[in-house]
Image (cartoon, rainbow, N blue to C red; front, side, top):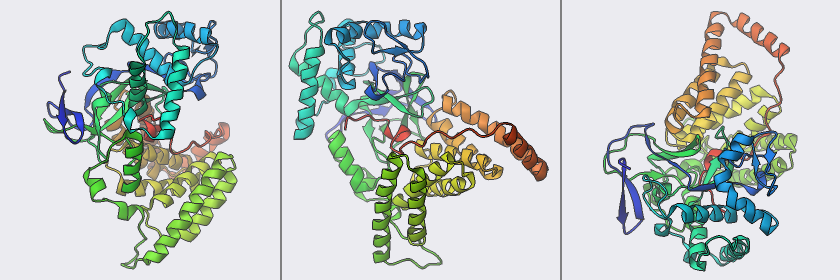
Length: 476
């Protein structure tokens, strides 16, 4: 692989550096998974070969566990599923996703050796497993998985030492990467990508990772000079410095020493008070509003889990009324309230309301996230759609264009989301021209179109933890 080189430091261990200059949107490398499996919870709804979501899937007639789009997908996935199929039949049931993934990895390594491609930079033996860093409760679950794996592993397959098996479990525990569906909107499985394991973390990274047509792509977020280390964000930057450091320590077993963590950059904005005409609320007022907002976030999440969306709206409105005059528009709890209220109101088809809070959310994100952040792009896309649904074509088109510019960098022109967004950009541009020529005619045509083809119910809102913010899979 010509674009990168492995280097080593005492602080971080191994990492990757660029061997040439890159610009925003450049693909530094792409990599297929060594092995990947569908999440247990989605085993009957996602194709086990192409990872597409389908309404009707065909079940494997032998193991009764694997599901496929059709015969084509079943044949394409047979090489990986063949030994798994027999093992599931013999075991009597399908084991959990971690056990299935480890088994697929070992079967492939047994067949092809430790290096399965000329592009592979590292073997699994060289990757860290961090078993000695695990907490007692985590180690207990870890040992249960290994015990169940040994029961599941066929006697007819090559036998491996307990240390070798434990090492691979440790590697996927801290290096597994979420595999998304064909739209790239929902994590549906987990896979192992050896080269990606070498890319270190930074809270303000110069790269992002996206899954595109079955392969991960490491993409440059801006200019990267020759010899510069390549980094990605393992956790969401929207968390406070202290929370990011806690997550990184407990999930990935290292202390982050990046500039943003050391200097707690932007933490003051994330928990700040609203300033108007040079007047700020007192620290006590901000703290009181922050505490109240957090309690409302918890109540909001509970109501959302129950599917009580009218209660979600009531909680959000009460919170906004009491805290919006005090808290900054970059306050992370207020941003969560705005984001959820926008999503739920769009689901309930109150599009004007949804558009207002989507706009506030995006404006807050823009002050916190780095410019080409994928989460910012996705938020702008959602805001653009919501404004278009509300008939606010000027703002809607602007948001869609902003989202398209970001996703061209983070996802690239061939990604399904970018293609859909481009079609939406062309559509809103055409509608905007019509709107500028004659507002009355535009709204009349829009109203007539909606009467002839009523808007369908929006998809049920998902948790903000899903999707783009949770690419780095970690067993909780």
